[in-house]
Amino acid sequence: MIIGLTIGYILMMIFDIPLIIKSNKIKKVIILYLTISLLGFTLSLLQILDKQPLSPSNLIAKIIDTFVK
Amino acid sequence: MIKNQQLSSYQLCLAIVAFIFGSVAIFSPVLSAQQDAWLAHVIGWGGGFLLISLYAGIALLNPNMTLIDVLKSHFGEYLGSIIGLLYVWYGLHIASLILHSFSEFMVSVNYTETPTVFIVISVLIPIFYGLRKGLEVCIRVNQMSMIFLVATLLLTILLSIPLFDLGHLLPFLEFGFKPILKGGLHLTAFPFGETVLLLMIFPCLKKQKDLLKISNLAVFIAGLLLLLNLLKDLLILGPDIMSRHLFPTYMSVSMIPQAVLEPIVSANLLISSGFQALLCIFAALVGIAQIFGLDDYKPLVLPVVAFVASLSFWVHESYPEAFTWSVKYWTIYSIPFQLIIPVILFGLSLIKKNKKWTVNT
Image 1 (tube, helix red, strand yellow):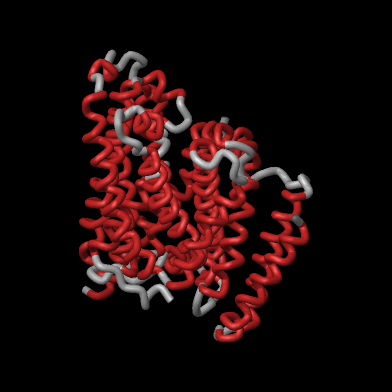
Image 2 (cartoon, each protein chain N blue to C red):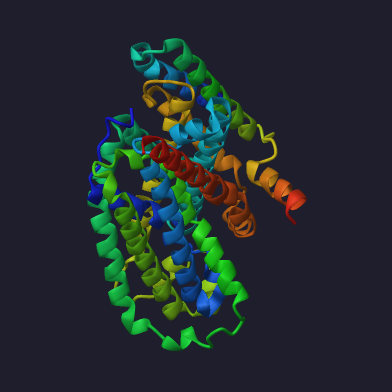
């Protein structure tokens, strides 16, 4: 699964190279692209390894319970 | 990037209807009101009119400006960008919740042996393709698919009329007004309040002066379709089964004799949920592009879609958990996004407009 995930993300980046090169602000696009890809990859990897952090829904529930209820 | 996209009034109206219809087609937040769910729906529907008018008002007071532009204009570059990023998160969160609910529904009723990840990826592939092609393409596809959705919904309602039991509407107000008001408030937040994200596409409307009329008409149509759907479920299943079943619309349609209409429910959910998720991801993408000063959002489509796929698995463990969380926390969580910030924006826009008028005179 991890190998499949890594290959998937590499293929994704290869697929998008022509579009990124054509864009006007290449540096910004690359930084944002890599940041978002890294976020998604890390999240997927942690889920595969069953080590995912506290879900945003649980975090939101804790915040609401602390301040509102 | 957004100003190149042009939508007609008819296209925007159908887009808003599909967005609202979304995942509420299979599950309505008013079910806890039991036999008075229809009244809770009417109350929530009224709230929907108020909210969409607020958002249309913001768009009309700030012509040709997206939500991010308005935030930056009124709160400044930095604070506006930070609040914009919160809305980007909000859009991605809604999209992941929709995908999660849809995939759980599909696995529960149709594809019991299929891994959820395959269903999520199958839905995201056309969403990715549509986003790459542009908003106009997606809106045109929605124009055609909405005809199918409305026609099939009305067909299922007509065919189920012999199964209606008007006794399921009684006793009226058995549990008082509290569950009705609670249900109505939930409905206002989900799905009507989520239309705040459509502030990212309102500038695309060709005839801006029609925006208020079109948005209210869309809320009327969507609300009416949802009410008819809700009444169908209530009159067939009764309040007890309807409020306890995870997918009451699917169950009510399965009871129609001599017709296999369950695939229609799945198809309708796919059309409306898919489109709602697409618009949410589109709003997030345009938001990211505007906040970081990019000319086009298209290079970021694939990583954002991949992130939403991961998020849809992370956000909840199961559908019952998602359901419970939504009932308990969604309305409170959404209040800043759907009400507080838009009201502030509307007020500031009015003050700015009055100041301009005073200076000009």
